[in-house]
Image 1 (cartoon, one colour):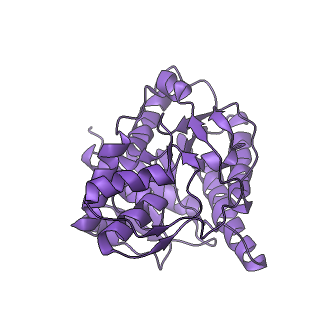
Image 2: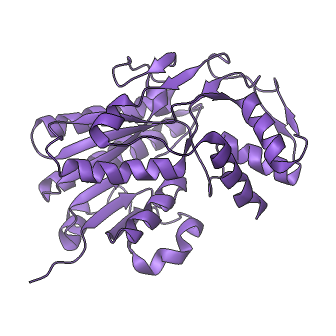
Image 3: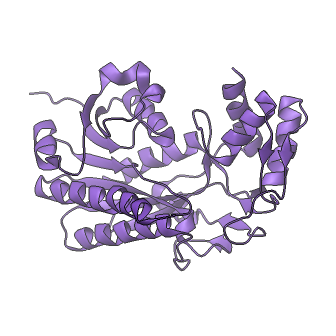
Amino acid sequence: MTTGPKKILITGGTGFIGSHLLHELLSNNYSIVLLKRKNSNVWRIKDILKKIKIYDVNLNTNFKKILSDESVYAIIHLATKHIKIHKNSRDIKKMNESNITFPTLLLDAAVDQNVQFFINTGTFTEYRLKGLISERTPLRPYNYYTATKVAFESILNYYVKQNKIKAVTLKLFSPYGEKDTEKIIALLSRSFYDGRKLDLTQGNQKLCFTHVSDIVEAYLRTLSFFKKSRYKKYETFNIGSNESWSIRELVEKLEIISKKTNCVTFGKKTFLRDDEVVIKCDVRKAKIMLQWQPKVKIATGLKKTYSYFAN
């Protein structure tokens, strides 16, 4: 008796990172179940819609039935509701529902249906934003959004310690790349191509910009990590570039790539915390345990991203 390809359930697969991951998983012969909101825009995955099983879900969905019907063996959780600065109780409710309640209901159903693995997605802004950031850096959520990410990770850790599921959280450092629409490198690329004015902060903060192809590779490495003896317990891994670049430096590089003069005005916006922050991602743990490290240099990644918008 032969068995089909391993079946993975993904949340957030219509988004920037999730869409790239879906394509890569299909090319690696995984079978995909996608959970999405009814009104999600599927433009990033239009070419593969017929190759994946899709469920439109909400908080009242019977997740246990979906997992049972589909015989899912692993979940990759990317779905999130990001509001940089919450303004009212409605914003709080949206983030609580999307970032805590929804993944907790899915996780509990996964445990009930004996799903083996759960990959959670976190962000570097959960840490204290100062200097070299390792997995041991103290947590100090940047805003309410990152506080909800920390809250769900605590719940996930509880389920793992109860020996009910194996899990890992990947904390991503400043993702960018093709098909992005809202992060800084995408905004800069569109500004250069279209000649639109773009108001920014002073642009001195240095971040570890990580190309989406490197991030996708980290998820694939994590799936392999679960199957090997190196997995002993719940782990978090920093997934980021080992280089830091300021916004001003990115602008200079895009001027060279695009052969255009920038339309950026620095100092028009205020940074939520410290405009002089300098982030460095410590990727040693991921390198040793996941056998992962970033490969795409910033010049190459910027060229790919700018070319995507130009074409």
